[in-house]
Structures are given as structure tokens and as C-alpha cells.
Image 1 (cartoon, rainbow, N blue to C red):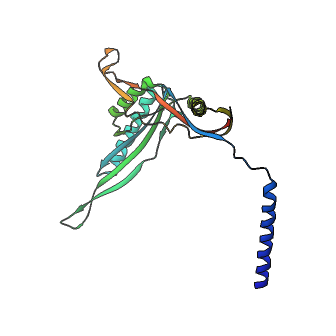
Image 2: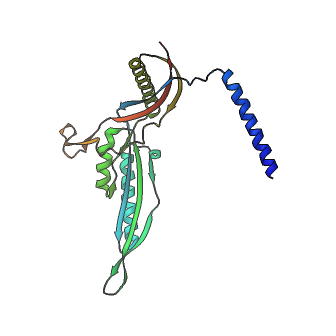
Image 3: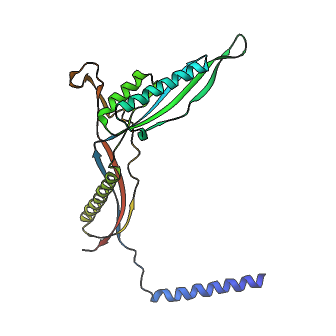
Length: 246
């Protein structure tokens, strides 16, 4: 084992020497000169889609009473959507969730049955935001217990994301040109481009939604105006450009 190790070590030394002997005659390796930058792009757009998540919840000592009431409210909500012209394929309803509930009795040192909790979840997509106020307030009037803030979206989301990506690319190029100009060099061709993530999923319009206190056209009893603001689509690009000597 010792002899083999020494022979192997000697071979490594010879190979290393051969490489070293060749290195003086080789052309020196030059690392490419580059500029790496990031760019961001934001496109604002008016939403034309709103998604609502709702829930009908009832509690009663009688499971049948709680169930019937939940079903009744759900039917009323579906009738409201039909009246407002919302297509059935834009509405989703879950099955009933039925759960017994208890409380802890300190005196008896045991759980005591208090009744049943029944719930049905509803989801609706609204493609005409003029109907948003009527859906929300009509749902509450129908007995829906829970209405989450609407999530805004755009039917042109793919194109808007592409526009944001193009804006981010232009921003990255402008940043690189500014750096090159400051250094007294010229910007060459692009070497690499890495596109970052597109804009996040639509956010609830809690902050973007403004509720007008005045009824539309001054008509009493009509649903308040829900005026959505704009939504933003954002993209990021990381790019590397070659540097050309002046």
C-alpha cells in the first residue's frame, strides 16, 4: 500500500509539473466585463372582475332547524344572483357542514351539548362591477352571515403581466446604460436575462374599495356605490450586459 501511494503521488506531481510547464506559453484568460442590473415594471389597470367568498351559518339546538334555515338562505342568495343576471357557472356552493357544539360545565365537570352549527360556503364571480354593491348588500339582506372583502382581478391579466414584464426589461436596460455612462464605457449586448415573478394574486379590496354614502342617482333604498380603485401588476427582471471598451 505504501509503494502504490508513493507512485500515485509521483504521478500527480508530474502531471502538475506538465501543466505548469504549459501555462507560461498559454494566452492569459480574461474574464468578461459585464454589468448586472435589476429592473422593475408596474402596470395599473381598472379591474373588471370581483370574486366574493360568503358563508351562511346557523346555530340551533335542533339540527333540522339550523339545516333548514341554512338551506333557505342559500336558496335566497342563489335567487338573488339569478335576478341580477349572474350566470350559474360563476357561482359555487359547498355541501352543508354540520357540527355539534358543547360547552364545559364547571359545576358538573363535564361537557354540555349546546346545539348544532351548520354552515354552507358560497363563492361568486362578478364580471360586471356595477352589480357588486347589489350582490353584497342583497346577500346580507338574504341572511348571509359572512362576506369576505371582494378580491379584484382583470380579464386582461395575462397581457397586463406581459406589459409589466416589458416595462421591467426597459427599466433594467436603462439602469445598465446609466451605469455604463457613469463609468465611461459603452454597453454591449445582453448576456443573460432572468424574469422574476409576476404580480401576486389579486388582493382583497379592503383598502381599494370606497363605499359611497349616497345612493346611486339619489334613489332611496338602492345599494350604495362601490367604486374600486386600480389594481397593479408588477414584474422584475435581472439582466447582465457586456461592457465594450470605448
